[in-house]
Amino acid sequence: MFEIILLIIITGYFLQSFLFAIGVQKSFPTINEDELLSSSVIVAARNEENNILKCLQFLDKLVYPKNKLEIIIVDDRSTDKTGYIVDNFIKDKPKFKKIMSKEEKGKLRGKTNALASGIEAAKGEIILTTDADCIVPSTWALKTASYYKENIAMVNGFTTQIANSNFSGMQSIDFIYLLMIASSTINLGKPISCIGNNMSYLKKAYLEVGGYEVLPFSVTEDFNLLMAISKLGKYKIIYPLDKETLVTSFPCKNVKALYRQKKRWAVGGLGVPLSGFVILINGYLTYLCMLLLPFFYSALFLYLIIFKFAIDFFVLYPIHKRLGIEKNMKYFFIAEIYFMIYVLALPFLIAFNRKVRWKGREF
Image 1 (cartoon, rainbow, N blue to C red):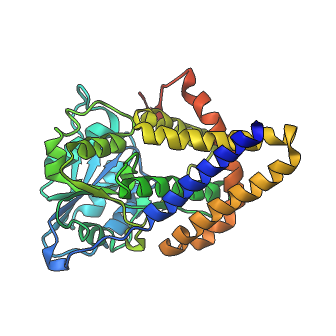
Image 2: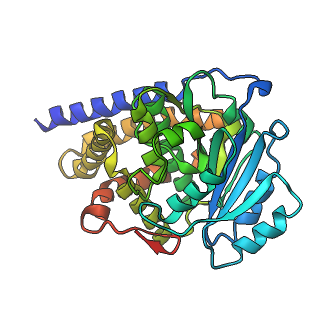
Image 3: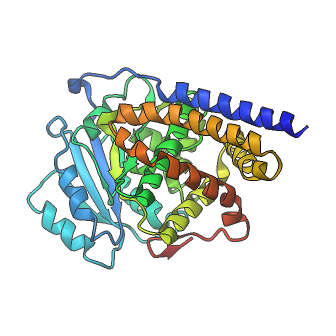
């Protein structure tokens, strides 16, 4: 009986991974540079004095048609030198603008409030968002905007992380794996997630759903907006696998920061549709079998390990190669161990306490 259950679980994991591999590789047409809509890049920054300068330096290198791009930095009431660094950098750069986030009220809290402030001030037809601890390629805005063809209202992109140790490397592999799921499900018409540090959408679509002022508050505001625009039923949402739009972020520095990140994502992801829960349950059962098998069927455990690792590797490697970060695959095996630990622990992280601490605030 147990062998039959195991076979069903393994088959489910294989089919799921096969669909991921198909969805993530889907290609999309682009428009010419002279057809590009105007764009506004928005970065919400709170107490980012250690990261903001590098972010600004890369944003300053963005290539885009003249007078069609603005970059808005929202100082989310920082208590460090973030505002001073921004002011000093942008003083002679007219495409940059710094504003302060408005006073929090109602559903507008934390980063959501800062983004809403930036979008209200934005003049661009396309809103692009990234984070203060990220660096973007010079082609990021132009290539992202080039996908806005026909009735597309949202274009998402991949984010990797600087990987120079086992700890940062496993986070990098995890990021790509999670975004592979996000990309494939969106491209197959069943959106369940995205990431706000590499996200774009039409401002008119944002306004049609009422903006963050109307949407219920969430610690994962990117997911909230994705689902709201999807529910309109009149626009397309895509998630291209494109090296030219790949954003790079910094990994969590320690286990405590990583725990808080995972907890925030888990709490924010409780609103995923049924398809999202099916994916989560399938993955959880697979890892649970890997944990329990050594106590009952040691031979089967070895086969399951080989099968699981092989599936993950052959799904992840082509994605890493397409993005030009295949060197990070050297952390694949440590990432697989990390996957097992946090996937099995995830339900317990939020079962008894759903409070989230982020950027010195508690939600």
